[in-house]
Picture 1 (cartoon, rainbow over the protein chains, first blue to last red):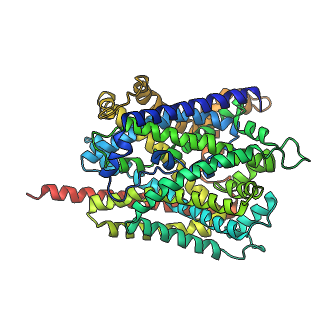
Picture 2 (cartoon, rainbow over the protein chains, first blue to last red):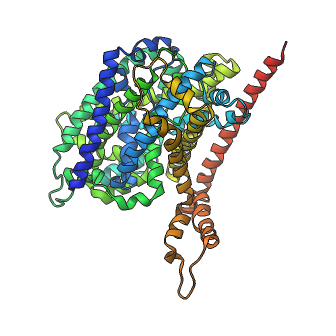
Picture 3 (cartoon, chains in turn blue, orange):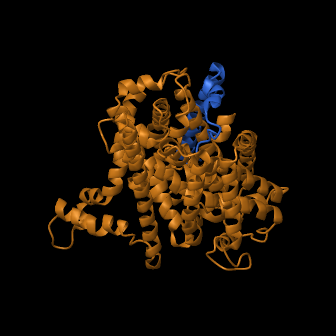
Amino acid sequence: MTASGWIFLILAWSAILGLFLFALLRTLRSGNKNMSGSKNQLTPDETKQPVQ
Amino acid sequence: MAVAGSAIGLGNFLRFPVQAAQHDPGAFMIPYFIAFFLLGLPLMWIEWTIGRMGGALGHSTAPGMFDSLWKKNRFIKYVGTIGLFGPIVIFVYYIYVESWLLAYGFFSLSGKYSGCTSEQALVDFLRAYQGLAVNQHFSSLATAYVFFLITFGLNLVVISFGIQRGIEKTCKYLLPVLAVFAVILAIRVLFLGTPDPAKPEYNVLNGIGFLWNPNWAALKDAKVWLAAAGQIFFTLSVGIGVILTYASYLTQKDDVALSGLTAASANEVAEVILGGSIVIPAAFAFFGPTVTARIANGGDFDLAFVTMPLVLKGITLGRFFGFLWFILLFFAGITSSISLAQPLVAFLQDEFHLSKRRAIYIFAAGTFILTQPCIFFIGQGVIDEMNFWGGTFALVVFATVETILFSWIFGIHDAWAELHLGSALRVPRFYRVIIKYVTPVFLLAILGFWLLQKPVTMLLDRTDLLSAGETPVGIPQVLRLWLSEDIVPMLLAKDRPVENLPYIWGTRIGMIVLFAFLSVLVFLAWRRKGARRSVP
């Protein structure tokens, strides 16, 4: 593991975690309708699971 | 929690490590992140917005949505056919790989592979299971086929009989458990140290370095960029058409900007932080870089099946945890295969007014037949061929078209307003520029460089073309060489074993026929619409 590897890893992890925490906090704070309420508008088939 | 749970699946733990290992991980991660920020995030927003708009106009699949976005173009709906074609092609091989997870869960519990203590032994086990070899573990494909039938049946049950609400609730709890378990496994991998003291350089720290040490030199290879973009599309489900269908059920009150960001970032946590900390470092520590790359090149989903049994072997209650790991991934896979079924089922329901059950039967019958070559000719490269053309190339083409439609044909001003309808999140304004200019140019550049890499390289380094005593060559010679040594051999699959060529061509022709068939369905659907409109 080189120094540039560590830098790359730390930058990448920070960016991803920062983005995720930001989105999660905004979702929780706004009581985002899409995360809960909108599921009621989906057809019974929908699971809203993206393909992984 | 539901979104975070839904972000974890096969792409994170099976496909991502293989794609990275196949393309020099240190080189792969750089275009991967660039693709995430310049392609993945914009495309998430584009697809959620187009989907919601399409839904409001009564369309739940790409042909109708594209047709609505560009009313003046009669042919754009046929380009939207890729949004039906991609999910089917991916479903066809995905469901077979999904069945391996179910099988490995049971093998783990029964201890069937517990005698395999080396990379070669586990490769042999997997090859025999896939029907590529006969050994003490398996003498035929029968076991794999039985697990495929169970998996296919389970998928049908979930899709057909309305128990998906139950599955959804189950996944809501199972997938977070998978995330927690992935954290435990990542910690376990960190403590693997140096499994073979005779090879001290094969250790976890170097394994992490294998993934993260930047290799700038390898960035010149356009295939790395295409693979990184393909992985971003696959893992975020963009460029497939699935998100379009889901988003078509949303209303203007739903926040597509924040939902897209949350889903994308949660997926990246699962993929890069968890997925990237398990299979690649473990594979490196056990096998070293060369063998890891060789296993990855052996099959697009093989690496985790060879590596994880060794990782799990060393922990207390390893058999049980192995079972848990593979079964949880299996459930994650089921949620994904359900989503892949949605576009065609929705298309048949919307455009041909079929009942849901009948649409599912047609989908099931078609995909069952199409999966057979994946099972019986896996050794001839059928799955890899489908994964490239259906799971990578088609996605990039589809994404290019929808980005241009969204930002240029529909217009970035209206598109931006549509994205923010009902949104609590303001997307940074520079993403307007990215969506309008950078994303389409990036996509076109990937396609262009993939096609033209060799002539560009030749022109940049003309000495390659100089033979003794000859003068430097020009563009015509370069193009001729490109045709004769690059693009034509690639299209003719000349880099494949000769004995596999009939299967490669069979797969390609099959995909062309499938695309043509879907295009005919789109044609018939629009003719019916036209006929209905003309009735007074």
